[in-house]
Each structure stands twice: as C-alpha cells, then as structure tokens.
Image (tube, rainbow, N blue to C red; front, side, top):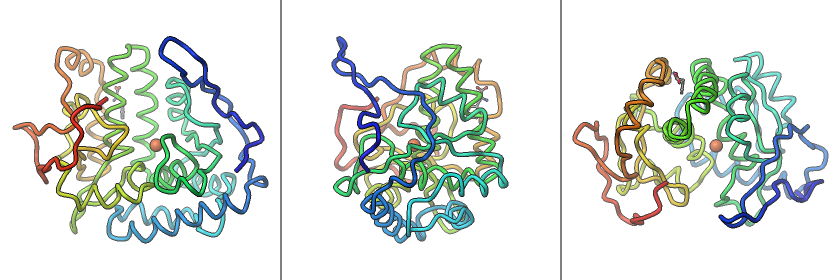
Length: 297
Ligand code: PHE
Ligand code: FE
C-alpha cells in the first residue's frame, strides 16, 4: 500500500554508504487503509504457499495456522489474531514499520510481543523481497507462536538476546546464527520425512521446494555449538539446513546458560556456510551445485 508515512526507514549517508536508521515506533495496524491491491497480494501469496506447503511444512505449523484462523480472503487484523494468540500462549502481535534495533527486538520477544511489519510487498515483489514485510512476519512467524514449546523458546531467545547484547558483539553473532538456522531456516524430522518450520522458508515459494528437494544443500542434524559457529547466506538460498527432532529438543538444548559457550566459541574459527564436518549427522551431503564462493556472512 502507499503508507501514510512514505519513508518507513530513513537512510543516512555515512562512510559505509547509506545506512538505514531504524524507527522503534510501535504502530496501530492501519487496517482500513490497505488497498485492494494489498489484499490481493496477501491472497496470491497465501494461496500459493498453502498449496506448496502441503507435505512440506511441519504438521504443527499447518495445524496452528488453521487454528489461528488466518484466511486468504483479506489481510488479517492483528487485533483479531491477538485474541486467539493471547489465549493460546500469552503472545501478542505489535505493528512496526520494519526492522528494529537488536536490543529493542529482544526486549519485545522477552515480553512475548512479536513485532510484525504492517506493510505488505508490492505485486511485482511476490517472489523476492530483501526485507521482512507483513507476509513474511505474519504467515511465516506467527503460526508457531501458538505452540506452547516454541512460544517459550522464542521468549527465552529474547531474554538470551538481552544478555548476549550486554556480553558483546561476538556473543550476538553466535546467537543470531542460532536464530537464523532455527527460527528462520529450520527443518524438523517427522516420522514421514523432513519438513519445514523456519519462517524464512515457509514464506518463500522457491526455497520451500529447494530446501527439501534439491540435492545442492547440506541437511545436517541440529548441534547447538556447531550452528553458533556457522556463517550463513542472506542473498541466496542457504547452503546448509539444520534439522531438529522436535521443538522440545530446541528448548532443551538452549536451556543452559550460554555465557560459558560464548567464551569457548570466541576461541574458535567460524565455519563456512557450506562445510560438512566429521562430527555432523548428515541427512544429505550437498552437491554444492550453484553455490557462490563468497558472500557468507
Ligand atoms: N539459554 C540461553 C542463554 O543463557 C538463552 C536462550 C534460550 C537463547 C533459547 C536462545 C534460545 O543465553
Ligand atoms: Fe523473519
């Protein structure tokens, strides 16, 4: 839509070029001002992903998505979803303009508030967008917040983020990798095969298929410290996906205090996004087809 405030994120020229200056404003979802084109984008993306995700997204993701009552006909109202979400796990959605400063984001999560970008992409951006929009945030992240174990994991992550922020930038890098390889790009092993639970995947048509069906990427068993050392891609499909056995495994593995882990990891090299180690539990050793050599972050 055409936002009331055209520049959600201001850009400022620094010695690193233009950098975004984030706004921390929590905003009321301007639901009445979405255009028909905005609702149509939601409808098109929702219908497309719903088809693709049958047999690909985790059973729990699909079940909770239905339970939330999100439908394709119109962009959901945060206040309506919040009634369901609060009752299920005590989480609530808050509207934001876009990416938040890290500490602000962590504090929201720690208090069970999930920031959702209120604006939706344009019709010509159905396949790719470089920053999160309403479709990614709402369709991708929110269904699993209905699951009590995953809901606790996200809040614990927020508290862990506040702590890591105080420890320093290296700790934050380690923690961000964990978020990336679980919340955004995680796979889960069901009795009937691997499934997607990561929101960055479920909101992407191409990656929903690639992550499960392509021979190119590695698919490796979840290993906390290994993940915290592993670099990742922000501009291409992931070279490696990590597979959890259950949401309880995620919760249990991340329950210990990370402070000594951060100290230990500070002594170790990071791992390239596409590496396979002898200690890995390998579901698929990627062929590496189509990989770019540089660009891991
Ligand atoms: N246990 C972690 C810590 O002490 C916090 C955390 C929990 C981080 C869950 C990520 C996920 O920092
Ligand atoms: Fe996300």
